[in-house]
Amino acid sequence: MEDHYQHIAHIIRNRRTTKPAAMNGQRVPDEQVWQLLALADWAPTHGHTEPWRFIVYAGPKVKVFCEAHADLYLQETLPDQYHESKYEKLLHMGDQASHVLVAYMQRGNLPKIPALEEIAATSCAIQNLLLGATALGIASYWGSGGMAYHPAMKTMLQLREEDVVLGILYLGYSDKPQSDGKRQIPLDEKVVWQE
Image (cartoon, rainbow, N blue to C red; front, side):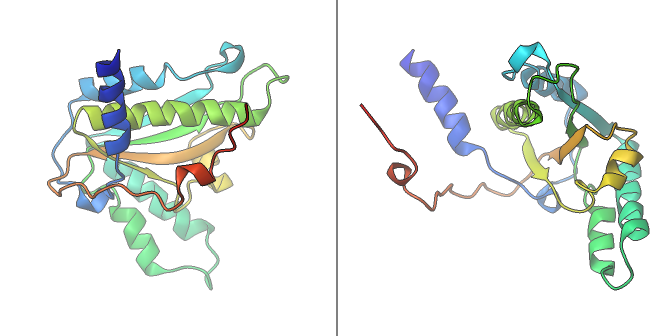
C-alpha cells in the first residue's frame, strides 16, 4: 500500500501548470485524451448526478475554437476596455496545444443538491484529468481567462443558463523542464486539528 501512496503522491506533487505557449505543438494521441476523460468520469458526485461535461477540440478544431474565442472577446468587449494584445493572445492561445477542452458543469435534475456541490464535483473531475495528464507526461493548463466565464461563452457553446463553464483546458507536450513546486503558506497554518 505504501508503494501506491508514494506513486500517487509523486503525481500529485509533480503536477504543474504549463502555459500553452510553452507547448511544442506535438499531437497527443486521441486515445490518451479519452483515457484522461475516463479518469475525469470517476470524480465524486453527490446523488450520482455526474455533472461534469467536456467539449473537446482536436486537430483543426483547436484553431476554430481559438478564433471563435477571440472573436467573442472582440464582439463583447466595450471599445474602451478592448486590448488588441488580449485579442491576439486568445487567437493564438492554442497554436502549440494538441487539444483544447472546455470543462463545464451541467446542472442536474436534483435541485436539492446545491449548485456549489455540482461545481465542486466538476472541479474534481478536472483535477482527475490533470493528474492523469501528469502521469502520461502530458502538459496541461487550466485557463479561466478571456471569455471563459462570460455569459456569451455559454451562448456560443449552446449551454443552458444554469450550466457553468469552469475553464478551458489546453493539453499538449512541452520540452521545457518543470519548475519546482512551492507552497506559500505552511500546512500547519491551514489545519485546525482537534482531538
